[in-house]
Length: 98
Image (cartoon, rainbow, N blue to C red; front, side):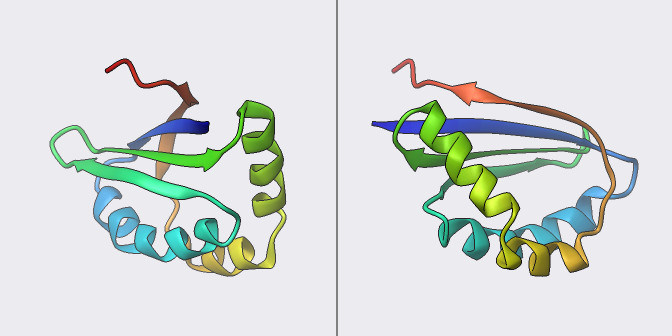
């Protein structure tokens, strides 16, 4: 069983391009902690960025893996160059319906 987390960011005006350029550097760090990037989509017109990440196991296992990842030196290194600019976030677990 896999658990999927859907993440949607509304960016501050003019900040999406920098975030999109930075985002690929985040993926290898997440992968080291058992996460799989399912998709990442940028909507330039609405200045939003939506992505989904999954890991094996239930929500509790996801939360535990994310806590380990959040405290990791790999994440800290990636976030040294984080461009910021996120005005609002929607983050939650999602399940397939088809």
